[in-house]
Amino acid sequence: MPMVVVITRDVEPRYRGFLASAMLELAPGVYAQPRMSAGVRARIWAVLSDWHATLRRGAIVMTWAESAANGGLGLATLGEPAKDIVAHDAMLLVRRPLSPNAG
Image 1 (cartoon, rainbow, N blue to C red):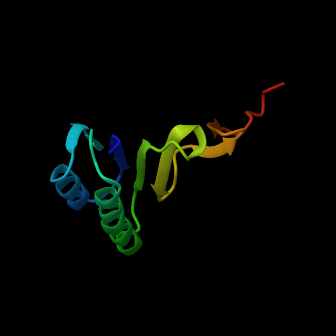
Image 2: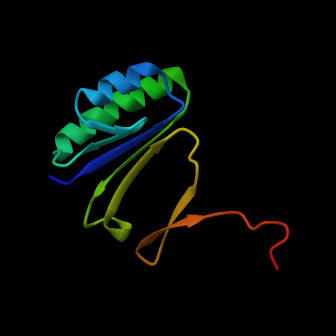
Image 3: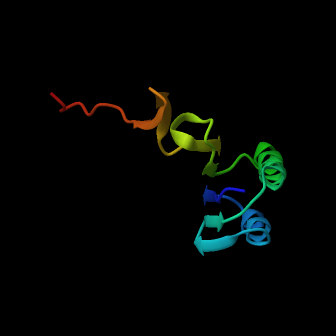
């Protein structure tokens, strides 16, 4: 049972109440649970996905340790991601656009 972290940005208050009922809110919009089973994680993600499909506001990222995933990190996102995360050579990397002044 790996640690699970959920980060929310610009979402309705209902997410806060729901996530706080299953996880510790470390900071506004940042939730963690040190030992969460894959089944509980999947049910929480299903609720978040259903709400996001209906409400269409904000962004949510869920991450957990997963040895079979790139970089050993399981990752699920909803909404507009703040960063473009890509897999490269079994690692996860953040891709940012080149600035016009880069040379």
